[in-house]
Length: 149
Image 1 (cartoon, helix red, strand yellow):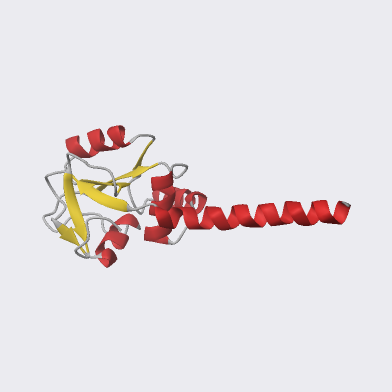
Image 2 (cartoon, helix red, strand yellow; image 1 turned 90 degrees about the vertical axis):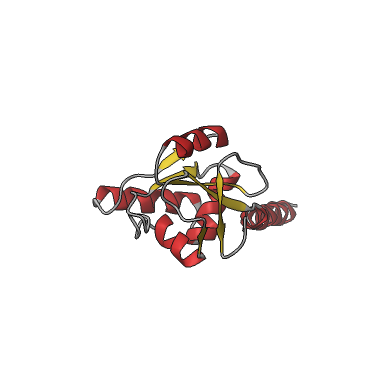
């Protein structure tokens, strides 16, 4: 009887882990930007270098400001996975290390899309990652000719 309970618990945990690992793949993300700074289109390679903190300025010289949803949100988790191949905790630690080492300025993390959009709309050079299925009033940036991915 105990062996059956143990196996059932193990199976439930395994199915839960599988479900969690596929959840981020189901969330489409999109890039929005302030009117100043970011070009209308980016390659995935360039976007990843921006998200990794390797690029500090846009081609026009404007300082890049990053805006992300918190990694405990579906969009924040999907951003970490799709752009960095990391889970949310790894993504947070990555950025904490970059900022602590003085290699990059801290990105802004938000609980709501409205807060993120307000920040991006008022911050020259800012880009944000939002739910790709959500309409935004901000300028949409295509990545490898796609509006969301």
